[in-house]
Amino acid sequence: MTRADLTEKLLDIKREKGWTWRYICDEIGGMAPTLVVGALLGQMKLVKPLAARAAELFGLSATEAALLNEVPYRGQGTPMPPTDPLIYRFYEMVMVNGPAWKALIEEEFGDGIMSAIDFEFDFEREPNPKGDRVRITMSGKFLPYKYYGNQQGTPDYGFKEE
Image (cartoon, rainbow, N blue to C red):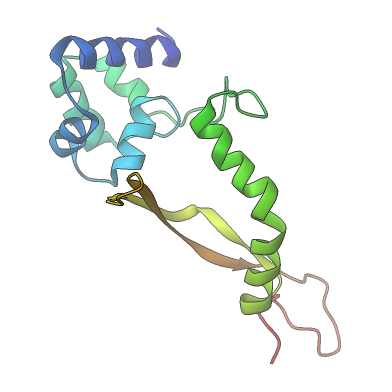
């Protein structure tokens, strides 16, 4: 069985049982919903105890549970630019606003990046009379660039210089 086959099997079971992602995440627990759903969609891995909970919930074999615990090939099968309208809007936000975000983050923190690994994501529905809105909160650890081979007073890392 491939990881893609397992994802399709999980989605089939979800549809047949009428489960919501919220229900599935509550049953498996242990990580943020984005990570649990991401793992079930083949983009993340579940640690062994969570893979066992998912296997019990979905009635999976030991081999299928082990597959949920493997590190996936992330981003596989995703065209660039993305073709799904919702995912494309995220891509568009980065294309349009990315240079400004970069400039503002570097001005505040220094020369580095925001981690997509040490990262948290949350969203909530924000009622609005003109149509409900999606409020997104993203929080990633700042990782300064390391200036290796530095000499004569050059700092080790690209933190903001005072």
